[in-house]
Length: 246
Image (cartoon, rainbow, N blue to C red; front, side):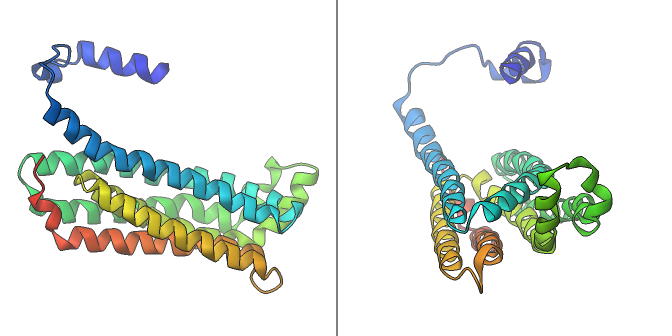
């Protein structure tokens, strides 16, 4: 509701966008509708696949026992908090890439994405390093009782989580850069490939609890982001998106 009110006021009072005539509805155009549907539908399924992958991940982790599930829940909270800057940069870059292409300056896209990824990696590293490598000093006072025991068990996974965050901070930017070009179908295909590899790796890890176990399951997250980043960068470097016509 707050977001809706903010955007409504922005549309009403921002003079810089008045020329867009956003409150003047044009005639129904089936070609415009078809373009919107073709671009947005893959994004819908991409979100469904991403959420389903997270759900299945915790279903798998539950097989390792209550302790592993509790540790994973704590790691997930830390993980989501430290990816907030990357998602902020990614959403902004998504719009910037689209705007750049709209201005017929496609050659600037690679540079924009590169700068965005560097900024995302540096920000993530700076804010997460002290918490993940000096956890007793930074976070222990926030946890009490049984949570303190889970926190102690979780510390062994913090270096791996730091590495995941660094790779994710890069991959999130590149992935959203591809989405900003309008290649949402390629984005969906990348999401499918990464999710399949991710879930298969997680499943293999829980089948070998003594050798891989929880560490291997979270390692699948690293594989997920690494593959996503590489495939997304390959799409950007190909330059084929420069010839898209909407």
